[in-house]
Image (cartoon, rainbow over all chains, first blue to last red; front, side):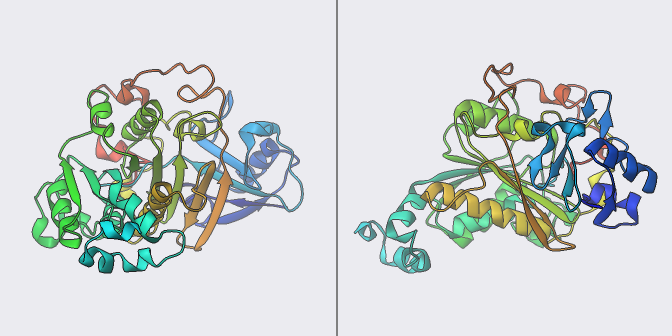
Length: 91
Length: 286
């Protein structure tokens, strides 16, 4: 199983849990699995080009944009972090 | 000793820095000589500006166009109940000078735009981003990259925060290397609706103030090429590695953005028109 750390924005799809688990040999497969387990969770993360450009995904702290994107290989014990852009700060 | 440059009162005021290895009288002198622009006198800007004022940063600029609202007081410690209705930069300036009358505080009661950004940022050594919306975040990033100034980034949403330091130059990632494009407007629930834990900007802003002081005094390892993520609910702090993107439109090998652009259009908004509050999303109201 692969640990997936969710941002607040997506936790509502997973019963407010900060962390879920999923399976898959690649990031794309993991996202497919997560969508089956938690419908709606991965909506908005992907488009035809791959991962949306305002969403970053890290595998063990490394940005997947530099490790193959959705094809990034995953294995048992990996930790995936999903990070959408947020802008809050002032008002 | 450079201590000679400080008055007796200042030596006492800054005693805990002057005695601190790594800072000392030399570091305190660098803080006194430094200037920092704090963009946004709100949730993040409050702790940033107050800690920098207390630390004796010689010149602090506060930029905000907004007025103090009762809903701000849950987290924006620059402002008092009596300040409701006042320009945030006036209220903030008063607070900072109460804290440390030996520094200079410049109030910029305006919005940052592509027309005034260079002029406003130019006189400062370090820029701290405490804004609440994507157009200004991209504007501040691009302007600091083009002016060659360090930018201390912070952002919050409900219970989670992000912080990093963006330096100009090759091999140093900027905000656009992190998020090449903003999310489409309205794609996420609004922040005014989403809410924010009042103390969260205190944590993230304090981290930003720490990074600004490290940049000024040249100590430690600033959050360059690293993105700090914190979750107040689990109280987990994690660090992701950021990479310089050679294809970055601003700091990459062949930049396509070489002057400040229309950031409202870039962020999918009608020019000059702020989106309805309800569609302002991941711009969390802080």
